[in-house]
Each structure stands twice: as C-alpha cells, then as structure tokens.
Image 1 (spheres, rainbow, N blue to C red):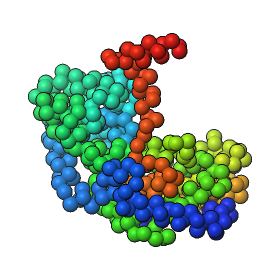
Image 2 (image 1 turned 180 degrees about the vertical axis):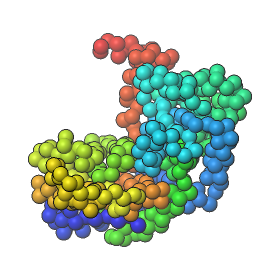
Image 3 (image 1 turned 180 degrees about the horizontal axis):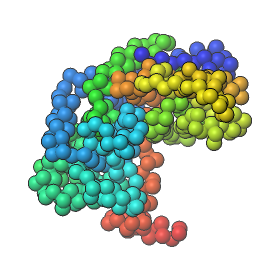
Image 4 (image 1 turned 30 degrees about the vertical axis):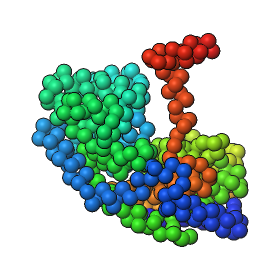
Length: 446
C-alpha cells in the first residue's frame, strides 16, 4: 500500500503550523468531497476506478487490441498532447523493458507518440518508422482542432489511408474524443472509426484512467485492469476523512513548506530511471492545476543518482527555495548482485555479494540525509514495486492530493486559462481565418 513519510520535514516546520495546515487540508478535502468548489463540473475522475471496473471500457479496449493483433500490427501511433499523452507515455515507460525497442520482445506492438510537438524532423522520422512497420493509430482529442495533434493526425491519417486504403484505415484508426460534438467526433462518424469517449467531467490532466490512457497502455501489452484495481484501492483510502489520509498529509505539508518557509519549488525525485516520465505527468498535473492567480509551487524534477552529478551542487548549496518529494520504490522486480573481482582495481570488492538495489537505496538514504542537513526538506511517497497495481495507486493518489492541495491554496484546480495565451498569438502569426486584427496587431510588435 502506498505510504507517505513526512519525517524529512520535521526540522523545518513547527507543530502548530502542521496542525494549522492539516486543518486547512481537511477543509479543502471537504470541498472536494462535497463537490461544491470551483471547477466542480470537472471532478468525474474521483470515481473513475470504481466506475470503469464496473463498466465495459476494458472489454472494449481489448476488442480493439485483438483486432489489431489479428492484423499483426506492430506499431501503434498514439496522437495527443498534454494530458492526452503524458499519462500513457509515463505508464508505458515505467512498465516496459527499458530496451524493448531494441530487443523486439513479446507480441505487443510498440507504442510511439505524436502530436505532442510541432517538430518537422520528428514527424518526418515518424514517417520513416511507419514505412517499415505495420501501423495503427489512436488519436486523442476532445475537439480535434488542437493544433499540434491535429497536424500530426492529418499526416498519420493520410499515410495510413495511402498504405492500406480507406476501408482498412477505418479499422486501424481509433478516436478517443467527445461523445457528441467536435471535429474529431464528426470525422469519426463520417469515416466509421471506432470511438471511445473522453468524459465531459474529466479534464485532460486527470484522464489517464479513462480510455485516453487505458487504450494506449493496453495496446502496449499491459494489464489496465490491474492498474484500475490499484487506483480503486487508493480511491477507497483517499475517501476517508482524517489526518491519516495520505493525500491530506501530502497536500498539507507541501503547502506548509510553501506558505511558511518560502519553499516555492517542489522537485519530484526518483532513484528509479523508469519514473522519469512519471515526473513529466506529475509536473503537468500540479503546474496546470495550481499555477494561477499569481500563486503556486513550481513543479520540477530530477532523476537520481544521475542528476546528482549535474543538479546536486545547486540542490545541496544553492538558494533555499527547494523541497523534494521522493517517489520511493521499495523493491525492484529483478535482482542483480555485484561479484568479487580478483584484481579489484576499481576498489569495489567491499560491495561483493550486495545487490545493485541495495547500493541504490544506500545512495538514496545518503542523499536524503545530506539534503536535509543542507536545508532541503523531503517528503517521501513509497510504493512496494513498480507494476500496474502500484502505478494505479500513484496516479490516483497524486490526482486526489492535487485537488485537495489546490483548494487549500485557494485556486480552481480544474481550469487552465493561461494555456490559451500562446495559442492566440500562434494563430495570429499563422494568419488563421478570423484572426486578421490580431495578426495586424502582433506584427506591429515584431
């Protein structure tokens, strides 16, 4: 079961402040629980694990994957941006064999991503890959008009239609989109694509446990039912009001460090390389949910021990604006012991018989002590191992804690008004119809 450890913050906070912020977090919990806070029409994610397990979504996702397996599909292009891709990307990176693409392991297709950027070389190289492989596509967009995924989908759709014909393309393309409206929904109806629904009451960054995340993760060969069961366990835990609620504890402490000690940057830390993209998912979740109204903790991340050789100096001795949240994986899935060497030229025989993970955990403990001594508070979120069940727990825990934390901070967790600013400028510069006045105005500034 997921656990939260706050002992690494003890020397930085006062008991009275812990009590104050715990009470604030419980009040925020009540707001989220009642569903009467700002953005309350976007809290459908709260019961996704229980509702999805009780429905047919997993079965429907499996039918798509079985159809592609019959066609010997070995490459699935998942198209989306932000929450429409980061959840699936981080889950696949976390669960996959690190060198899967090089080893051609198993019978599941390779899942790659597009639509998360406008890199021309990236898309050209994707075409190179598709030319070599047997391709299917999952396109994820509520509207179908978001620029980055729309550009990518136009290119991938045309490629698939040219390679396989329009009738076969209709089987190889699946859309995850709005239930009734939008350009992608209209196109899917026109072309006969199979569709999955993005619920109206679930925002993109909270959507990993909808078909947005579940379908690509299943396509990559992983057990999404097991992931949902892990999330369901956390749904039950997080629903219990009280000071022992791990989401309440995390939300209270991070806001206390921000509000009372001037720590404005939270670094999500891992000692497990496969969690690098989990940090990218977490950064969007917290950055987009809390960074508004001139408020918010800046979400950053590092992967240790790698980044200790690049960022370690700043973390240890730089400006004291940081605190760390460590995602700790207690047990590796495999074991590798260090053997003795007769010459011992590297001086490592003192480690003979010890596992690599033991060394990693000692590095983790040593880093924790050094950073705390250097003035960096540390929270710790622990899971037993890195599998679908525990990853499901992590997803739900951080989502629920995010809702509590944002309400505690006093902002709407579920909107993102600042995201639109760059889009308006981009459309004006691209001379999109309807933006003529904005185009003229912005060109005067250049």
